Length: 368
Image (tube, rainbow, N blue to C red; front, side):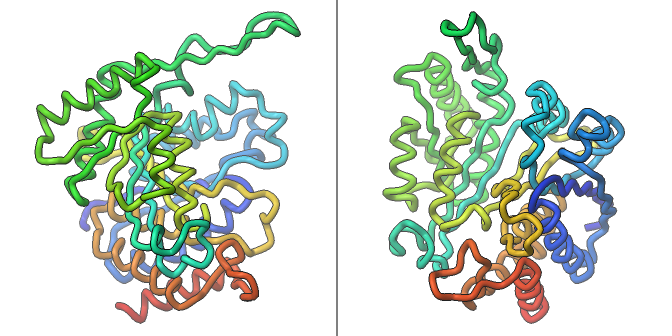
């Protein structure tokens, strides 16, 4: 790759700093081994920033984020967040980052690693070999719709959230899902609640229209979101790309995390519109959260963060060989039986966060 890629690192709260530091060791390997041209900078995000600035990210660092080609994000949340006003969380937290950067498409790949059959709650023959991608719309629906709020007096209060989507918003995320399917197995399953929600009926209509007009080479199925939740657990291999809205995507992607047996091994990417210079704003984030109960203990699983580096290399840097090398090294490490505490079977001594990364880097070097 000849184009300089500007990477901003936001470790955040809890275990975010620990797993992000390990993922940067893997990124350093990729930059060196594959001669990648990257500028990497790091700044603060989270509760400590709030205590100093009254926001979870400073204005100056938000400007840095807007100029970055890609952001490696750790985690948000933990002790002290009860003191952060809801409006501040919405405007300067992860939702605010998505809003200010225009990140409308969330990609959540879920793999059923055969080596983790002993820790997955699903039977090995059901989870092994699963390879699905949840494409979730991020900036519309119930989480952003207006009106919203709580009205009325105590004893008679009323909570309001509005589920609203425009045709343009649906078409935009549908194209992301269909384009992703073209690089995979060519199947999209769109999950909605068109049977009871008008916005869901519009969702189904627009997805169908976009498919017929632009993506007839892709197989399209529709499914009600509640049935989709059942089928993700019952028969996850039936899915290639699952397309869905903000709220259902939040629920379905976390439900799919049961397949490998731990949130600790799952990455995600949030993407915006392609810019005039050809770059595309993107934020890469492991999905496990800040896990304050284990922060600082050196036992967090870094695989989700490491696989975020692989996603970044593929999506933002077009460095597919480097991404594939990292993914293979992770799989080889799991096949060798190396486990952090969250994926260690009963009776096995787990390795530390750093030791897990050491094992991945060792296999990267050996495979190279």
